[in-house]
Length: 258
Ligand SMILES: [Zn+2]
Ligand SMILES: [Zn+2]
Image (cartoon, rainbow, N blue to C red; front, side, top):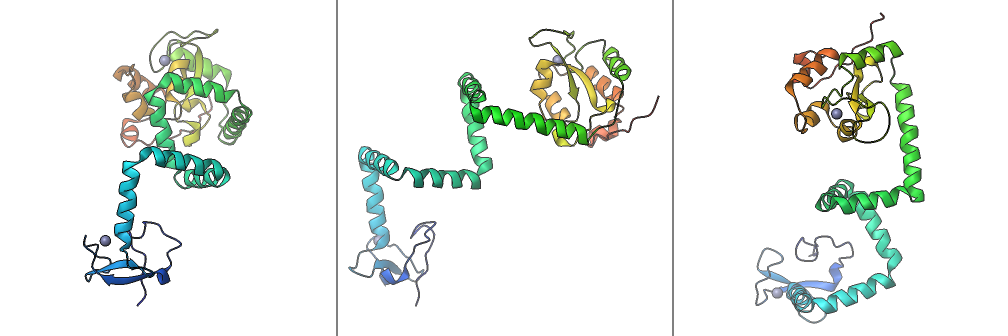
């Protein structure tokens, strides 16, 4: 009868399980039932219970954390290439989990995170990434575009009284700071938004950067400057019917020539 690797007994993931090295024998003292019929997995040479051995090793590791740390550090330095390769594959297979983990690290200590980000922006890889983002954005703008005029943009700016559509702050047309004037794509370009006048809003840099590529309503409702009146105003200006926004479908209205 062949012996199969079983979860929790011979490792959860055991590619090199060699059935010829084991046999099924009498149930051990601690009652490690391997086969489901009262027999334990035992080493073929000698008679020791496999699971008992594993438990002993586990206990020893618990009792000698310093020794474990030392030996694993030694192993890691001796097999550096192997370790980095394994880590790389793990990150590739668990991309979402790794991302969430790093995000949680960032929010534990945002100042440190920002410091790190600043550092990475200055590295060659960071610079390359920024160039790629810029190019991708340019391509996105080109591909999803309904032409509009400067007059229409000025009209849109006046519609909101030269204020940020989201927080209502007066917009500064020059300089640096929180309230510098940006054009915001209401439905983000990365989420299928189109570069057209029915998708453009004047916004301050703080709101625009904070909004990033979030879903507009989800972001705005939780935003500290949320205002019902301004939300209605945005909707009416962008000609989004209430029924549409309730279904969270932001229709991109084609531009009517004026
Ligand atoms: Zn046992
Ligand atoms: Zn704002």
